[in-house]
Length: 456
Image (cartoon, rainbow, N blue to C red; front, side):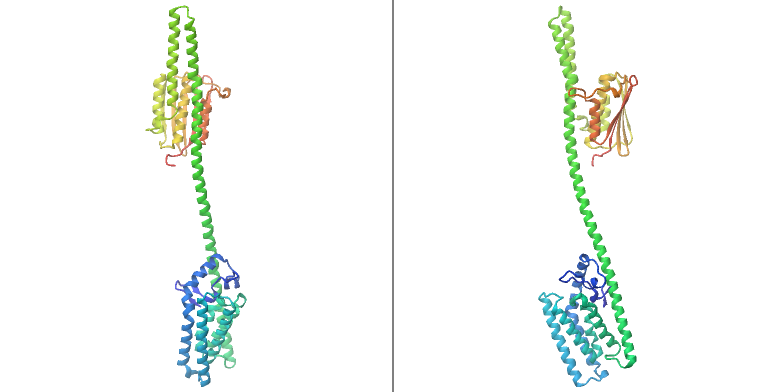
């Protein structure tokens, strides 16, 4: 066991590593934890510890040999022990060279060869530690390789066997001398096992935290992907709605123009024809001239209506002005044309609105003023544009003759499109139109639409 460079406790024997059957090392042995993120983290840890796995056993073997030579006098090593120590050291070196070659050829860590290597190396370490306890440095490699080389069911056994060698070295050598020696050995063995268990518990908790963090990151990634998809879908839907709004606007303009032609131009032409028919049968020149004057007046009126209808196909007033400015000019022009007093009022802070919103508000105002001119016989009209939190309201009020809103005739293929057209425009923008009127009490038309700014 050791401490990594970032300060966290690391026990190589306790690190999770993925094997051929998908198990995750000691992490599964001591209660299990998530695979995906933990295994990925284990791979990163393994990469950092790879130099130690490659060169560490050689260094520890050399340290154990040098310390054994330097302390040979303390343990009264005889000739046989020297030969045995040297032979086993050479055998350990050859065994480690074979294992290094095997790893470089890409052989699987958990296999029969790895199992045999671990226990043969443990046996060599056990014997040389019996000869000289300082060889326990070499035996410590068992802590770092148990989970890499042994099957899951034998990892604890391998760790315990390594703890036996370490406790024997710490107690003064194996076998212990007398009852006291065995007691000390037992106590040290218990301490080593507890330390291994505590370190394993810490590693398991770290693995669980890593798994939870990885699961959270994966969930955030899925949420971000879903959010991005939703944003893309909303953008596509927004574009589609704008296209549909434009198409609906074109259809509304066609219906409005048809209604205008029927209600004004067609009726004017019918009147002209009637007047001309009277002229053809007029008994005197004065009567003929009178009806010709009427026909001429109807023709001029119809021409004006035709020009107005064509002009209203597109809100040219919005080309270089805001909706508030366009409404103010429209109201002033209407008042000058009809001779009816009309006032425009702006409340709230005016903001540039989306072009569909501005066009619809202007069209509704024009339609309401047109209705007032043709039907209300008003002496005064007030138009108010109000900017409020999240909503824009347009109010058109007159003091004309009024009407019963519940008695409106149903719209037909040739009927007028006034109020129905206003409602259609507002409802297409998620708004609405309300009408308050009574006979002799004037009319109030209120249209409300969402406040959608120009840059949205």
